[in-house]
Amino acid sequence: MADYSKFFDPLSLILDLDEKIQENEAVHDSSDHSSQPSTSQNKTSFPEIVISILQTDQTICQACHINKWKYKCPKCEFHSCSLLCSKLHKETYNCNGIRSKTTYIPMPEYGYKELMSDYVFLEDVSRAVDSAHPLIERAQFSHNKPVYEPGYYEYNDCKDFKGSFLEYFLRESEMVHAKVRRYQSPDEYPFTELKNLPKPIIPRLEYPPILKPNNINVNPKIMDFYVNQIVPSLCAMGDDKNYGSVATRDVTCLQAISQRIHYGKFVAEAKFRDPNNKSTYKEYIKSRDRKAIEELLTNKDVEAKLLKRLKRKALIYGQDITDDFKLDPEHTSKHLKIDVDLVVQMYEKFVIPLTKEVEVDYLLERPLDD
Ligand SMILES: O=C(O)C(=O)C[C@]1(C(=O)O)C=C[C@@H](O)C=C1
Image (cartoon, rainbow, N blue to C red; front, side):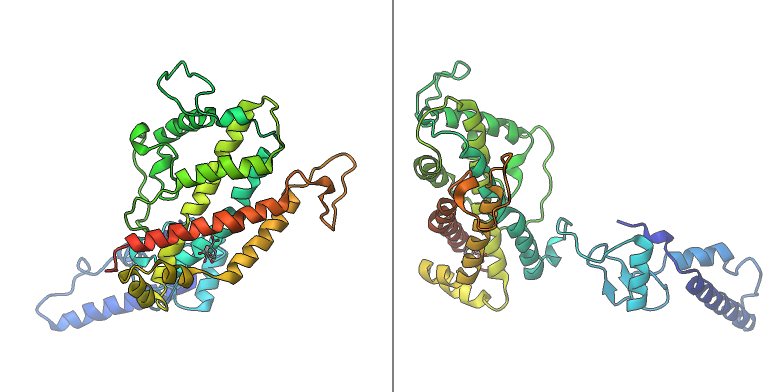
């Protein structure tokens, strides 16, 4: 953040100084009538006055140092009293006044508005693209069934592991990630049970405690759907022997889908905090009415928009850029590396419903008192 201790408008400082000096002199002049003799030693010195102005109390505008502040810059928290002072701080600190989506906000100030704004931001960057994009990469390889067959390989470094090559590779990846505290982040959930993962080797990061404590983890469902439905329908039949490449892509896909779906917890928290719906949510939660909760949090318009955007993005990112490539305005499948309709269907039939399931589960576990 900018160092405001050095910020001042010279003109206001002079005016302010003048005022302080006059006040100071008035105090000392009037003290002539008191029992305290006025001496040059007990007058406030010039540097002291400057310091006292620069260390103004927290209620004063940080631009003019005269008026009480009224506005707090959403980006850098600069306090200003007027449009003019706000403009001045923007110019001086080259601040655009737009709240950074990644800025940490202390929990008491983190309400429905911030949660929704973060959610919309994340929705943009991660909900549609990030979880669909890796699928395009995975679709470049054949199904490669052995990757998913338990016991296909024996693992010399862990003889008693009987899972598939994908599960082995996922577990190894998650062990490394656990060491660098990936699963302490409230939007990251491992597929491997936490008790089988090593402790982080670096200290815990403090995240704003937005979510209420909960144990919801739908990764077993995601794994099942991914291996048995997504991969076989998205990839060409057969075996091209690229097992390592396939496993790396699978891990990326699974993590992206998992993050997207578990993000439902944040969405649910935001929806619950919405002052317009809070009491209705509470009522449905108290009566354990899953269906009513789901209906209340469903927004069909958002779903339709999301699917439309997903299709557009998959069409664009899924284009095969060959030498004779020309952007196909009709988006015909001639240059496509992925079955776009299948991706959309997958979201419609599985990703969105499971996100909603997470939202409902979270709300049913959430304490009602705040
Ligand atoms: O955006 C929301 O409001 C959500 O709850 C998330 C989501 C989704 O999975 O994308 C789920 C349910 C809503 O009907 C719309 C979208």
